Length: 268
Ligand SMILES: Nc1ncnc2c1ncn2[C@@H]1O[C@H](COP(=O)(O)OP(=O)(O)OP(=O)(O)O)[C@@H](O)[C@H]1O
Ligand SMILES: [Mg+2]
Image 1 (cartoon, rainbow, N blue to C red):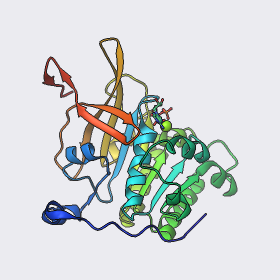
Image 2: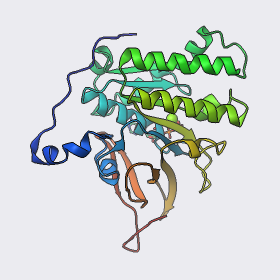
Image 3: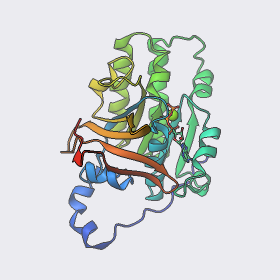
């Protein structure tokens, strides 16, 4: 793994940046403009946010854009993949205009496959023990500290959760992960895979209570078409809209537009 320092930070520019610098200090701008507008500047720093959605709703793409935009600003970004091989993810993300392979080469963006690391740690049983989870948390903490990571993504807690059978273990794992990341001033997105039924944010119902925020991605039908929609369900530490936004995955990144029905905004 390359541990060279990340790219130099891009200084904020213009009067708007200067005027908002007091709030900007406490915010982690996702770099997805419309999402930052919904969040009054970004995710409160150190927060752990669940990105929940059913298959193909754009969870991985959103989290990768968050990391890449951060890496471009000089915030070292760490992707922990449980679900998909990072080599495949890199191939997929290469088609987006906001991605440069040099971010990987200079270590600003670090992509890590968790399963081989867990195998190396000697986790040979399907179900992780208390000691295994303790070691996993310490390994992630050491990785975050040694890299100086300011942004982290775990994709996904659902896949990892298959190896954490008891709900109290899963709760404890997420609580401790949230603590070590907040201590490191590292803002994180944790992916949650859910079924398409409305009203659910995680497979086990444990995750949503612990995290600081929830961004929900859904598929919805309109005029025979399937749209992706995004909603910020909760975000501790900031006021935000709970309106629905239509999400488009474009070559320049994620775009959001208000979801309208009969000319009126859809709130839930
Ligand atoms: N590079 C790309 N360019 C354009 N569209 C893309 C690109 N990558 C992904 N997509 C679109 O986004 C969809 C889902 O992307 P993504 O993998 O982010 O979703 P996901 O919610 O993480 O899915 P899963 O539940 O399978 O992990 C794809 O099915 C495809 O339609
Ligand atoms: Mg995914």
